[in-house]
Length: 103
Image 1 (cartoon, rainbow, N blue to C red):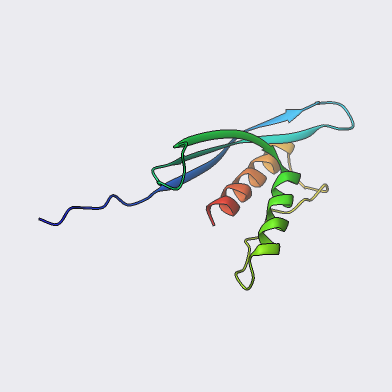
Image 2 (image 1 turned 135 degrees about the vertical axis):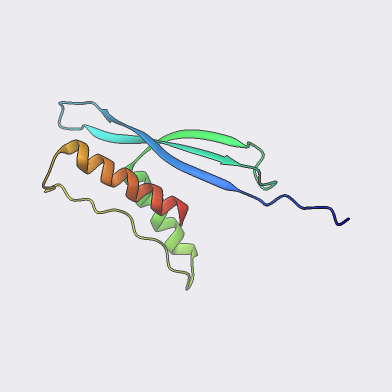
C-alpha cells in the first residue's frame, strides 16, 4: 500500500472582540486571532494573539508591497458612520477580518 501523506491544514479564527479604553476618546476594539495548523512550516501548532483593525491595515500594506501581481484581499470598511448598533458593526468587521485572513 502507498503511505498516505496527511493533508496540511491551517485554520484561523477571529474571535472575542473587546472594546479597550471604553468611554474614552482613544477607545478601540481588538480581536483574538487564533491559529491552528498541522503544517511542518510552523514550529508552534497553535498560537493566539490580540490585534486591532489598524494592525490588519498595516499587514495588508506589507502584503501589497510584496505581492507583485497577486491581488491582496480587501479589508472590511472603516466606516465611522455605521447605521445600526455598535455590536452589529463590530460583528460585521469581525467577519470581514476572518474572511481577509482566510483568503
